[in-house]
Length: 130
Image 1 (cartoon, rainbow, N blue to C red):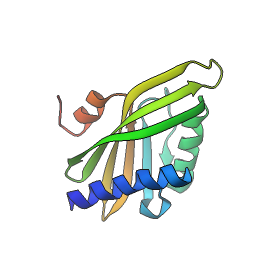
Image 2: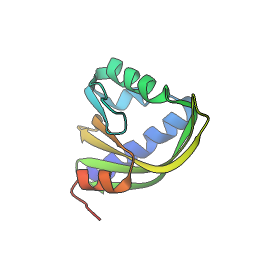
Image 3: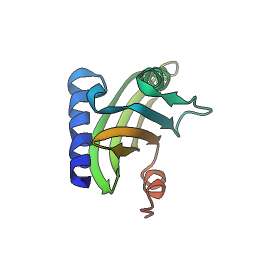
Image 4: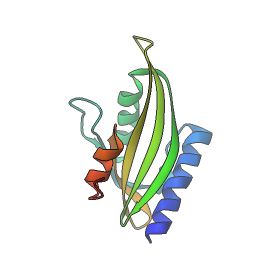
């Protein structure tokens, strides 16, 4: 099952790249998004919550891209290490960093997403400290 989970997440990045939208069909109806990069982040639940999270996160950037670099099988969770490039909306400051998403899966669907702005934070969250 865990390799299947990795493949679902890999395909979700392809969908994101092609459409600019999350792969809605693989998000569990009770999906949660937790952003450890946004100070005082709201609680994001369900499709409406994911849409609001993406708006909140994207509001800081005039442009951004995320390129997956590595996917790590962590049982019922998948860690996606990404290269994030962005330009600040107000400042025009350019940022490039390695961020990470941890996906918790249930029955082939994404139940929870945790966004971290570092590899070590994400690996620690799944018990794979470096």
